[in-house]
Image (cartoon, rainbow, N blue to C red; front, side, top):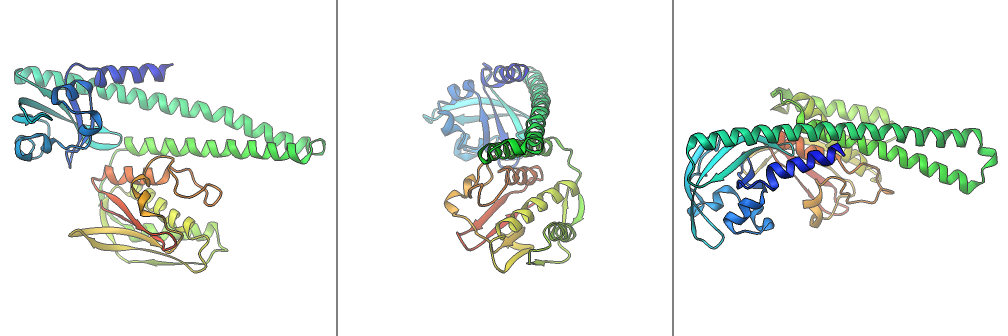
Length: 350
């Protein structure tokens, strides 16, 4: 009940607020969320508005959106969907939205700067409180779910151990499936908690050696499955400026995926290094595993979205969503190139 109340509070603060407002990415200025008042003001449908950036709303794609937003007030002219002019003040305040660096933008016509500053400060504080409440409730609900799952798993195992002779094969199979389902649900909850922690973790950027972290991840996988013969090609001395803990988690996810999806490859090979992409340095993790169809690449980083059946390759469907959030926290981007049967290469910047 408390979680629903918190969500209702968020809707009242943002979605149902009479003040036109939106949230945009801090770097690209792409719109991430918009409330009904802003949609009415600009005349767009929600799906249309979410395809825009702040710059595209300005005359000639510029104006008050030409430079860094920071924490400021800007006076400018923008255009509605019908191309009529709109004179506005944009009040921008830094925030986080779904783990991404973002800006809360209030759109106002005709109020004084002092009034607008007060409004944005109040709205920003209220949204931060609502966000923290949602995180707390989500964390509590997730942990509360673990206890009954442990009971389900424990009693299923007890029945199998103590009453096996009294159970026919079908009943034993049912109990095994119950235990497996409880274990899978427990792992999904753990994965969702990890996803939430990545968005809340404080970023501690420093110089790190990514090659060493990849070597450690490779050794751990070899120790866990010594029967597998996998060739690793790790470029030495690959440096970066990033959070050490989050970067290790990112690399463990990407190397772990490469390990998993080469499990049916006779001569598996996993590579790590750097490459020049679009005029800048990108890191990559490449494998010669099963690969995937690029037609589904956009859904690759969605939570619980899997490109392969669970009976083919195990997993929670959350790992790449965590990886994307870690990269976004660093202001970078992550993408993949692949083809069915031709392996996959994941590129990322930090």
